[in-house]
Length: 113
Image (cartoon, rainbow, N blue to C red; front, side, top):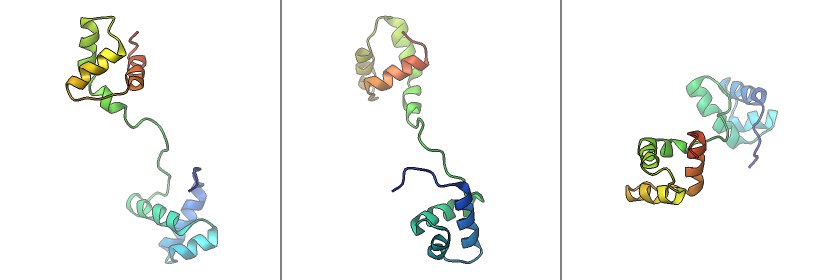
């Protein structure tokens, strides 16, 4: 599996060729690429009308800790020298489990020292 994004030009050519009636395997033999990739590109292109690749990487989990901001800020206001481990334990009491690194990044984003 390749870790690089294929050019939009290649994606559009394969999707257009398949839309005009050529089989995915034949389109990928003509332009290069794999039939599995053509399947992955044609389905969203049919739904959205675009063969643009989805965004890669980035943060997909911080919304979990951000949902607890209303709980974390009062904890810190109550005791300003609270450690990350103590915050972690207090959140775990309510059933919310986070790693120390997640809490650290939360504090950085919210300028909590």
